[in-house]
Length: 112
Image (tube, rainbow, N blue to C red; front, side, top):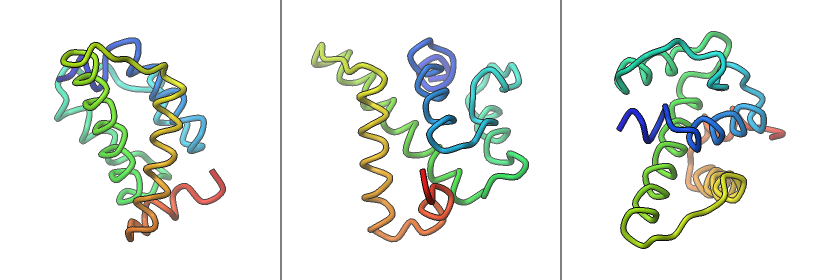
């Protein structure tokens, strides 16, 4: 799980794009502590200084969910999306979550 969500090149590229899009430089993998367990990574990401905790946790869930779905599509359907296409899907899902009531996520990404 750590490899899929955190360590692989595809995931790191996606997180870098998400960090730029959301204007959250701390989400860029180049700034992460080296952590080998997803739980520890999750806890460190959930407490980023200067970032809305609840909004960013929602974004973490969304990005991780989309990475997991991408992994399943690659494994079971032999389909793969380019990383920038997955980012577009995440942006679309973010808007949907906002309409559904994820107000902290919407507030985090205002103007993004």
